[in-house]
Image (cartoon, rainbow, N blue to C red; front, top):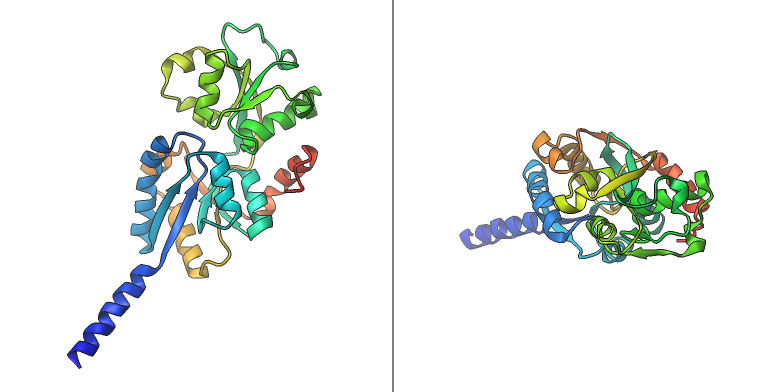
Length: 268
């Protein structure tokens, strides 16, 4: 009887601990930087919900997309375009986002002859990745919509894997103009690079990166995780350069679908 009871207790213990979820994060910066920021967040979520959270950081945005679009994360913090594709392919559901909209930027060297956005025509652009939202898609979209500069036709751009690489590449003269976002530019640790650059242009604000959940997760898990993210302490929010989290839903990302259509990307 004692052996049977012991077996049941051990079985229950392992069954409780087998339930773990994976958290994926879009790698806008180096994996080492992201790990420093997100490991404490994963620990916080585990502590608040009682659910094991395994943090997965990929080495590139392309690898992140491959895992995301195959349904490889239970929860993912992704850019808005990634979200609309992941929703279409695997049914991911946006539940929480930063209260502040995301703004894309174009940077140039301070000593560059490029003084206005119109001067960007026929210049070499650097972007993090094809589907980086504000840094690539929004800047391309607004250059086309407001300035009639069609980068996809000019094809004078390079993808360099991360926001930091964009800033460093422009500073070193690899490209004339670089796409990024305010947060990663503000958080750039390389002061020499940062001080050599100028923000030439800022886009309008668009819905920010959501935390989206795989639809196969238990509803109770989604509610627990959403609540924990909404109540994330300021110390962790500061690491993300976010002041407050708010609830969101799929409909708030319809503008992103419009951008994808304009850029002829809606076949994904």
